Image (cartoon, rainbow, N blue to C red):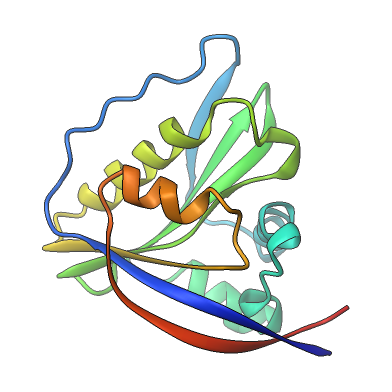
Length: 171
């Protein structure tokens, strides 16, 4: 294990935006809620999206704890398919009714750079606001893709806090 320093930025959106982004016309897309995701499928998605960004938090959870987390009342896992292939996912944590959290969001490496990001983020924001919260929150860090923070801000999220963090990651 090695230690990596990162800066975490916490963002919020306090009013539902009026976003409209059309999906790329040249791709066969389907966005579907995984109603009872299996641990194996979730771990596949988490790794496909997060491996380039050193996502580790969910890897540390036992299968039992992970299953309880992703199937908890108020938690939603949404999967983007491109031509039938899982291309990305986002997770909405609506257990706290006043502040819904967009917990994880991203595209697998094979699907980045295809014009999906803004449309996919707009769909994630729409899923969060469908739960009728007072605000939507998300966090990102300097280990995430360079486009993450600017994309969140372009989509209407506003930073409200930052903190330095040291993470343990495997080599």
